[in-house]
Amino acid sequence: MSFYESIAPWYNYIFPFSPIQVSFIERKAGSLKAKNVVDIGCGIGSLSFGMADRGASVEAIDLDPFMILKAREQSCNFGNSARVLFKELNMLKLSKEFKAQSVDVVVSFGNTLVHLLKPGELLSFFNQVASILKPEGKFIFQIINYDFVLDHGVDRLPDIENDTIHFRRLYEFREQDELINFKTILTIKESNKKIENVVPLQPVRADMLKMLFKESLFFDVEFFGDFDGSPLLSRSMKLIGVAAF
Image 1: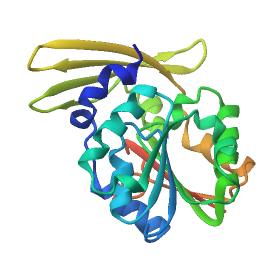
Image 2 (image 1 turned 90 degrees about the vertical axis):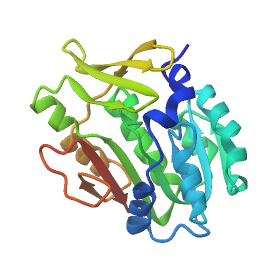
Image 3 (image 1 turned 90 degrees about the horizontal axis):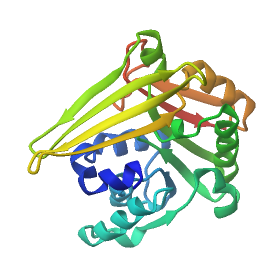
Image 4 (image 1 turned 180 degrees about the vertical axis):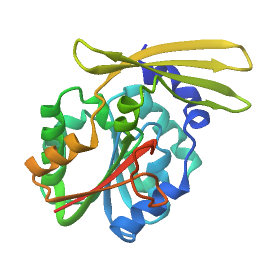
């Protein structure tokens, strides 16, 4: 069972929808009404439905088939579900799935990018995003601020806890290949069931992202430290980027 398949039934309790994310997208990309949006690493679709509420037509992709299944299952709970199309797709195959210059906004939240484990994969992905965006399009993404993690020896992220779950997130640096083992322990409080997983991640720094964007078809990228638009600081937990042509 994959990491995301194992946690999918409790995903909304771990990562609940945050309306401030949609508001940030609209501040940086303009009104979403009648825009075509691609949501990469969509999970169970909460952000996709939130953007559809603002009038967007969303094509939402995720590599994990169980996440796509859960997203489709919960479509019946949303009146705007006709505006969201879910697809199981590898993010490195965007240019084969979408027409050139056909998309207004591409978003990728939830630390999705660092599942690409080589800088060359990130560069290929950035170029594919650029190829499907319209000339005035925007690419908006969010990852963990790995400068903070690496420079301060952070070995765990803050626990997520509520009445239903307790989610522990641990980092273990791999010196042999400079990746990070992302270890999680999800405890379901009602049953005291524990679900443990380990996933490798590429802890990409801000300077590396800037370099890759310079090598790609984008000419500009701006970083933020949170969805309220605050600047990226050395101790920011999030890194949010807005890339444009």
